[in-house]
Length: 95
Image (cartoon, rainbow, N blue to C red; front, side):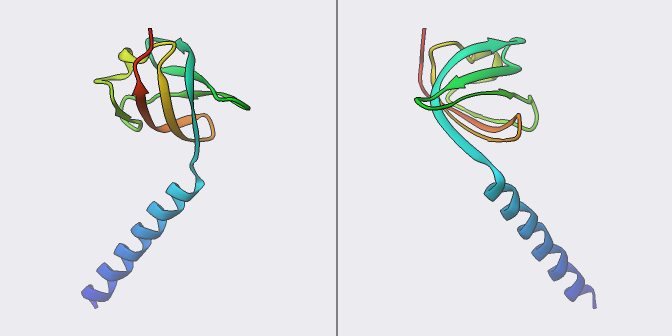
């Protein structure tokens, strides 16, 4: 009984993780504006511009130590859902 329950819980957690990754969108472009010490960034691609919130605990950062290192002109790839960034990868340092 306990084995079946733990298997069911594991399957449910995997399903939730999968749905969360499927629902995220991605944009690749340059940071055009940084607000609140890196708590919010605007990213512009060729055909799109979005503003997302950067969480100190829920957003994964790659290429920088923390959100205060995000600067205008940096090339980034951002995975986001709604107005919240899930992952920000700095691919090229800007100014």
